[in-house]
Amino acid sequence: MQILCFQRIAVDKDAVCDFTKEDLAELARQLVFETDAHPPMRLEADGYGFLLSFWKYPKGEALSCVVSLSRMLIRNRILGWYHMQTAQQAEEADDKLYHFTESASCYIQAAEMFPEDDEYHPYYLKFALEVYWGSGVASRRECLALCKRIRLSIPKMAVFGRLRKSQRLRDGHLAVALVWERTQQQDLLEGTVTLDSVI
Image (cartoon, rainbow, N blue to C red; front, side, top):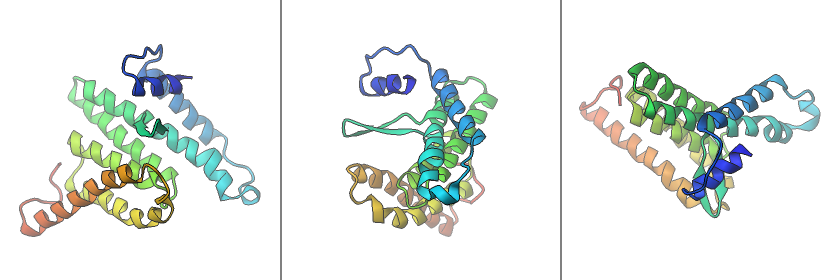
């Protein structure tokens, strides 16, 4: 119910919702906890698709939820989104740092719930990269490591992603990371930046 309420607000800014972002984050934490507390018992018999459907994907969605509505990609990035919002509103530098770090961590964990050939794998890595870019919590080395993971996963997911309506939006989103990576590599070669400098 809470998620549907937040989806409605994502589409209609004038919609009213009785739930807060803390409610949504708590719901996501409960989903992650329940998923971890009840691991699959018969993976060999049920197969990898069963594991993805009932364990990996729900946990990945809780860590970083992306919902498609009305032909638009609406991002309700639950725990990653929650920590990003909290960091942006925090007044103390330590609180900002903590929540930005948690946001990036949630997005990376969400990406790792999906196979490398799933379109959400590089997409969530790109969200983590955006947190790094905008927060000052990561070095150029860490950002370039994420860019490399994104670049290496794109050819794997391209085989399955061609039929998606959201392909153009997704590809444009990921292209930003690839362009940034090339620019940074050129700057490193020219010696104008270092790997250890914070973005």
